[in-house]
Structures are given as C-alpha cells and as structure tokens.
Image (cartoon, rainbow, N blue to C red; front, side, top):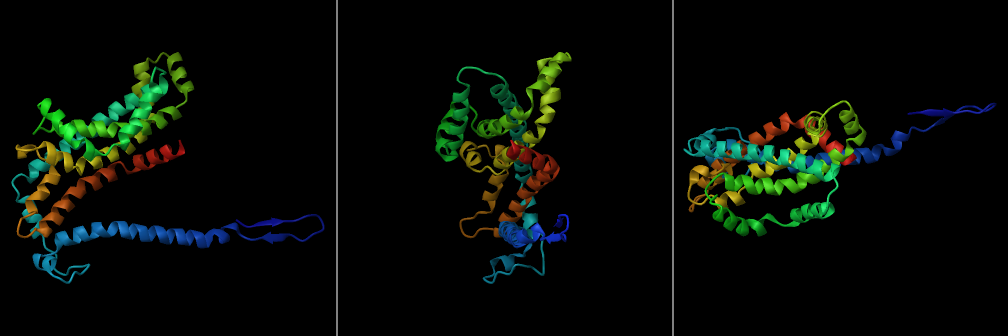
Length: 294
C-alpha cells in the first residue's frame, strides 16, 4: 500500500511500497512449497500410474512416468480376490468404531481435565504425554498376551481396543485447548438460563469444539486404516477378521511379486482416505487453525 507524507510548506513525498521488499522472499517461499508438494505427491502419482500400467511396462527395465496403453487388469485381479470385499468392510468397521469411540471419550476426558480440579490432574496429563513417547512396536508383544488373556485374538476387538487407546492421548491434549478456549462465562450464563450440565456439555460445548474433534478424528482414521502391525500380530488364524492392509500379502509371492496388483490394491486403499478428507476438509482446516491459535 502506497503512502504519502506531507508537512505545511513542503511537497508530499511518496513512500515506497512495502510489499515490494518482501516479494522476492514470497516468491522463494511459494517456489519451495511447490517443490515440496511435487516431491510429496510424486510417490502417489507413481502408485496410481503403476496400477494402470500393463504387466509388460511394469516389468520393463526402462521406467517411464507415463503410459500410452492404460489397463485395468491389475484392478481386476484385486477385485477378483474372494476376501477383498470382506477385508474392506472390516477395515471400514474398525476405523469407524475407533474414530467415534476415541472422539467421544477424548471429548469427555478433555472436558474433565479442563473444567474440573481434582487430585493428580497434572500427573494424569503428564502420563498422556509419556504414553505418546512409547513406540507401538515396543508394546505389541505385551498387547498380544493381553488380548490372548482376554480371549480377543482373531477378533476385530483386538484391533479396535489398542487403536482407541493409542488415539486418546493425542486427542485429549488437542481437545483440551479447544475446551479451554470456551469462556467459563458462557457456561455460567447457560446455568443461569436453566441449562443442566449435560445439556451444556452436548448442546453448547460439543458444537464449539467439533472442529477439534474432526481434526483428531483424521489422525485416528489414518492410523487405524493403514494399520498392518496389529492386524498381522493379533489376527492369526481367522482370516475372515483381517483388514485391508492384509490383502496386500496376497500379491507378494515367493518367486515374483505382483507389483501391478500391489499398486492397484494400494490405490483402492487410498480412495476412502481421500473421500474422508474431502468430507471433513472445511472442519479440518478450522480445527487445525483453532489449535494453532490456542
């Protein structure tokens, strides 16, 4: 924005545009962002391209970033797998239950640790952070014996319970900021108007922190949908309880891997994630923005 400065008896002097000084840095930042976006998107492009390539081009020693004869043979082999549809429904069920359960529990827990003061509250919050630092691989064997003792091996419950537990610490910490951002005066005004604590919780507080719930649900959905470690460890003999990542093992063969089938199955696995992102895109942006602001 241009500006002029003038005093009595003197000619107005035009000041330089401020945004011109920052324009080279802005162009450099945009170029860097474009390069990073291309680097991130290229593996996805190559996956989809390989899914549509015919078998001869996939096995060729000369790799080209295009194909002049796209084929659906890889997708046909994927959908001809007898258990593929069951795996897809199992993954959808497990991810849906984990998202809903972790969101509701995290909302109630975040409200409790923010609005109520009780003994060992700070200790509890620190334990949430410590739980985030422990790698999942280190807990797989103890969880295996735990699921065995509870009789949950070879069931979808053995996949739902661990993912809910691992999703809660991050969700509670993130939602804690959203709940804290809601002024207590609003809660007092609701009580004065005759609203009960339950009504305030679900009709006033819940809609206000809903963007945060969406943001946490995205991370829960992705980690659950792409899980392979728990599915491989806890589903041992009953393949009907397996999830979609286990379907990729069908295309890994001792003599030669079916890379076309692997890429096609991976592409099919990516579609629900993209659909989920499209459905929650606006809420996700506002939720992440609110978290940063807090």
